[in-house]
Length: 309
Image 1 (cartoon, rainbow, N blue to C red):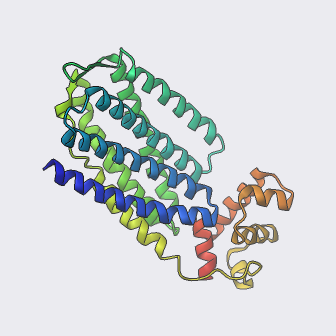
Image 2 (image 1 turned 90 degrees about the vertical axis):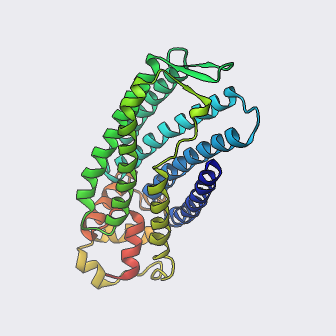
């Protein structure tokens, strides 16, 4: 059974790699910051799966696999899981266009490092290598509460944002992400009370089925299909925007300039330098353009321009 489970998770990881490749391609092509941040968070969760499978494989197939190695790989897994939360928060704050995003992300990152420090300290998790047992203390419980609090913050952000993009091209993308995240949140809530009562865990207890891999692989398939839909048609020429398109959405001359720069693959910083305006002004113009056209990202803006709708 363990070998079948490992084989399943290897297939899940391969699908994840395929999704990462196509998302990374479009993030690079469009220079969309939000898409790049999404790629990072999806890559981090893929890392969580890889570390989980690695621990299972070594436990099942390597005779004499040491408790100390298992302990440190498990620790890396926990750190990657916390990093996923911080990456999701950073991504959602970005699509919300919240100005102190970097400060809020830094706060969560700092608290994550403190929680992880408590977790691996003698007050959090103490390894008994001879008995292959990890004993948990109050540091573990503090880290657990932080993890749940950060996850709850993500759920609140996600559901709030879906209301804003419901009538835009990004609806399916965000709904799919929210379903994926909600499933993981439910898995966390299910194990929360049990984890609070946990005083120790042994090497033989490792290897439970990672249920969040199910929405992960389904969302990976969705991502592959979602981004492949836009890979065939070509964009208009680099200096082309129809008058019909401009008048339909009430695009100003400055907004037209910025859209053309986006079509040329320019980053926000490039646009600011070439138009002699501040980076904040570029972001404000892009936000206004997104609102007028009914999109929520640079990628979807290009897709709308491509279609001419």
